[in-house]
Image 1 (cartoon, rainbow over the protein chains, first blue to last red):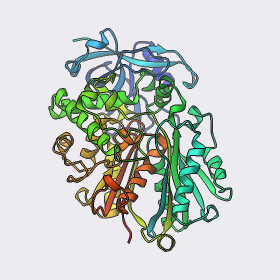
Image 2: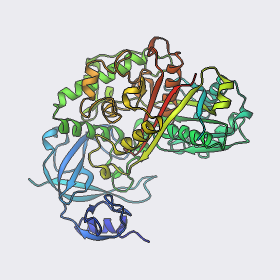
Image 3: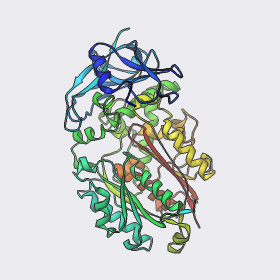
Image 4: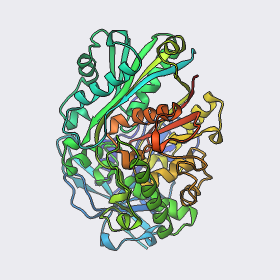
Length: 134
Length: 389
C-alpha cells in the first residue's frame, strides 16, 4: 500500500503554507514528518492532517564547521510541535553567534526554504526553518 | 546456539595513513589470521564493516575486493554498513553464523579511509547519516547532532553548561592520557583543560578537542566455534552477549539523551550474557565526542542517568577506577576510521582480557564490553566478551 503522505506531498504542503502530518486512527497520536506506520503504535491506519505549524525549541547548535555547500555559522534546532512530534530545522532571522541556551523553550512558527541540489542529494532539497514568534 | 569465541585479532595503527583501505584491511586481516594460527584457506566467510568507501575512495564491491586481496576468493564476502557501528555489525553477524553452526571459522572486521576527502567534503559525506529528506538539508553535522544533545543534557539534568563542558573536557583529558599509552593510537599525547577550551568551536558547545579526529585504519577478528578456537589458541575469548538495535532520524527519537536504540541493544546483550553493568570489568564505548562518552555511560547503566559527568570527575572511569572506560584512548585519542571502530574496540577488549595491554592494562579484567553508535543514534551494537580459558 502506498504512503498516505509522502515526501512530495509534504513538500507541496509546505509550498502552500501548510505543515502536513499524520494522525493515527488507532492511538490518536500525531506523526511528522511522513512515515509508513505510526511511531507510537505501529498502525498504518492514519489520516493526513494539517498541523498548527507552531512549536517550542527543545535544543540547538550553532554549526561553525559546515558540510560542503553550506555557509557557516548557522543554527540547527529541534522543535516539539504543539501536536507532539519533533522536527529538525534551521532557526532564521537571528544572529547565530549570539544564540545561547536561553533560546530553549522559545516558540516558533515553522516554514521551509529551498536548498540547492548537489551530486548526492537526488534532486532539489528543502530544509524546515523556524521563526521566533514569542 | 553453539559457544562462539574469538581466536585472534589484528589492527593497523590509526591515523592519517596515506594508504588505501583495501591495503589497510589486508594488513589487519592477515595479522588476525596469523595470530589465530590459520591460513586464508581456512576462512569460510568474510563480513566487512565499512561506511563510505564508495564516496571517499570511489570503491564499491569492497568486501569482495578485500577478500581477494588476502586469498579468500572461495568465500562469501559481505559488506555491512551502519556508519560507525559497521564492523560491530560484521562481528555480530559472524557470531550468529558461527553460533548457528553454519560456519566454523569466519573473518570479521572493518576499514575506512576518512582522510581521503578534505574536511568540508568529509563533513558532507557524514551528513548523509541523518534522514536525507528531512534532516540532512539543514546542514546538520555529526558534531552538530552531539552538540544538540549536550544542550539537551544540560537542560534536562539542570546542570550549567559551564559545568557540563568541564566534565566533557575531563573525558578528553582522560582519553588522551590513555591514548598516550597506546602505540596504535592516532594521538599519543596528553592534553590540558586549557588545550580543550582554547580550541576552535566546531558546533556549539563542542570545541575541536571535544571531537574525535578524522582517521584511516582497519581492524579484524577471527570468530570461531568453541571446538576450533580452543585448538587454535590457549587464550580464546568468548562472545557471551550481543545486541543490535535501530532508530530513524533524530527527530523521530525526540529526547535522545538516553538513545532508544542503545537501550534496546544493551538490554539484549546483558540479557544474553546473564550479566548486569556492575559485572563488566572494562568497556570500550563510543566517545566520538566528549558528551557521547557521558551519555553512553548513563545509557549502558554504568552511571545513573545524569551522573556520567560526575563519574568522570571522580576518576571512576579511569584505568584503575570503578569502571575503566576507553583504556585504548577511545575514538577520541585512538582515532575513528568509521568502519573499523567496532572491530578495534573488540581488538582492545580481547587484548585487555588476555592481559596484553602493558601500561594501559586494566588489572585482572575478565569480562569486557563494547558499544558502537552509528549515524544519528540510529545503529547501535553491543558485544560482551569474557575470558574463555
